[in-house]
Amino acid sequence: MQLHISPSLRHVTVLPSKGVKEFIKVKVVSRRLSYRVLVYSLLAFMLFRFTFLLTAVNTIHEESKCSGIGCLGRKIGPRILGRQPEPKVPDVIYQVLEQPADQTDIELRPEIPQTLEDLIAEFKGDKPDPKTFAVKLKAMVTQLEQRTRTAKIQEYFYRHVASSSIPKELNCLDLVLANEHSTNANARLQLPSPELVPALVDNSLFHFVLASDNVLAASVVASSLVKNSFHPEKVVLHVITDRKTYSPMQAWFSLHPLAPAIIEVKGLHHFDWLTKGKVPVLEAMEKDQKARSQFRGGSSAIVANKTEKPRIIAAKLQALSPKYNSLMNHIRIYLPELFPSLNKVVFLDDDVVIQTDMSSLWDIDMNGKVNGAVETCRGEDKYVMSKRFKSYLNFSHPLIAKNFDPNECAWAYGMNIFDLEAWRRTNISQTYHHWLEENLKSDLSLWQLGTLPPGLIAFHGHVHAIDPFWHMLGLGYQDNTSIADAESAGVVHFNGRAKPWLDIAFPQLRPLWTKYVDFSDKIIKSCHIRAH
Image 1 (tube, rainbow, N blue to C red):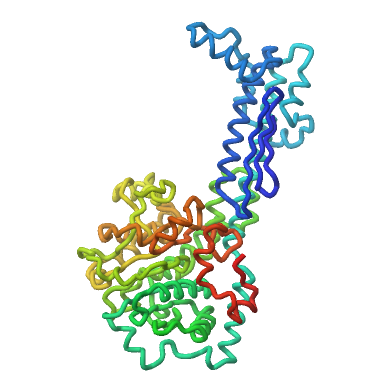
Image 2 (spheres, rainbow, N blue to C red):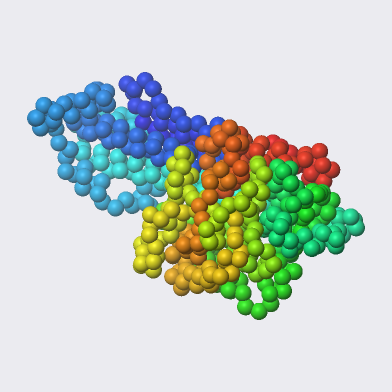
């Protein structure tokens, strides 16, 4: 029996031994990299080992002429009838298999059989020596484990590169817009215009906040929000971006106004309190960066590690993602300070698409709570909607175990209603900062990467569950969601690595996003941005 994992990780094939008519072949038909490839490869591997060992035992007892199913029947049958099976596996086989594998010996040994048929052929004729048989069997299985491990690590690495890199089309868009900003007066208009500035603090309007350094993604959020609004003249979208993206972002919304909606574009450098003095998140991010640099060593060094488990390597690769050390990822914790005159805002991630009018969110009674969010521990999709505190926090750490319930329902970032008046009466922001410090003191061991875990802690007891209609999750890490179900949601969220602007996006879900991109636009066309 052979297990073959193709170099592209698009095929996993199990070829059986003689006498078995069928074979298992798992084909990944899409161009993306999927966790299912890993799952199927492991499944195939376990099937291989089971049948391999069963046939190996048959061989050692001179039963190689029977089929695997037949031999299994002869072994299990007597047990069912109350009798002990006759043959026993020699103890020497267990002794050899339990000894630590010598990696160097395995790598340098050219005579390791590559298939089960090769192994059987070596022991046909004379009665085989059990120890020699066990040594070769162990070498084959160890070599297979090494190859499977390498394939898994390659998949993690390719997925990391694909999700972390900036597509050349998006880089082109930033450059073209930056040029427009410097050469075209119409691309650097004040946003909003002076006569509309009072609307930025008018609590009778619907205020949305979007933090993004991705112009194309921000344009889709804005376009989908305004186009689906029953009252676009009451929509105010506050776009916050970083210094390097400010000029391209301002140029885009200057050249592509969404009137009668009001768009404000501000850079982080426009908030004096955020750039001067002590800002706890910035201090924590600096320490976080130093702490992560201790185990990074670059992606090449991480992948080259021969001893760590693939899941540990995957976590370290994930830590290299720029978003984990970006203030844009923490900005929501400063909403009360960013918008001191507003009472309520809806915060949107830049990988969401709005598919309905959002004004009724302002009619939801939050019952004094601060954060209106969709819970993620219940729902039809058990893969996406099965998240509890234990999914994010490390309950093996006494500090977490002492303060929280592992089975408490988690909730999602991406589309949240924040009652800023209620927030200002709490210590949520201070709690957030405190736990960031605790995580640093604990060597980043309190939770998984990202800003949701400290958010779960900071907003603990301050969350009001809203209807799941308002936030469908998981479109960026699984493709089980049907188009019909996704289209029936108020907001869809491409959270995960497979962002809709990347080549690794799920092709059947991408149209939900691309429908809000004008591919006939001159700037879009100049950067060869296409619907794929």
